[in-house]
Picture 1 (cartoon, helix red, strand yellow):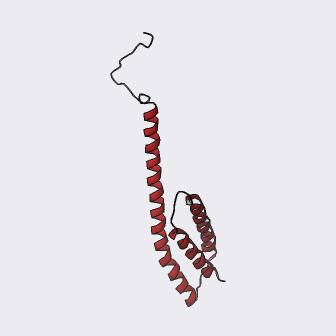
Picture 2 (cartoon, one colour):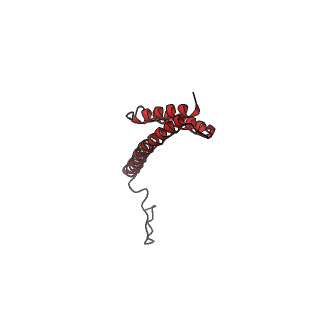
Picture 3 (tube, one colour):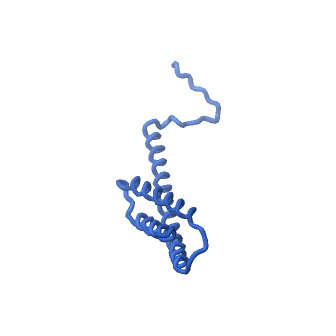
Length: 117
């Protein structure tokens, strides 16, 4: 199998992985698989050297088309993760303020309260 065919196969595998539904249960597994496939693709791409035959050029064009869809799907996955991280931070902040409502209170006026009364 030529390097371009291997790249095409890895690209198809990556797209299939990105097409899976990401839930809380399988998120870590899918992200690990995506990272592994991206690393493999990077190694294969670095080994590809011109000149190319007509068949290899066709495979390259297919890979380029798939790359566009993969980039969009990766962007969607990462934006979803960013949104969930923001929500988690909000929950933590809300939880902390519920447990200790006066913990982060700052006074600007310089008022002093004697706590020994």
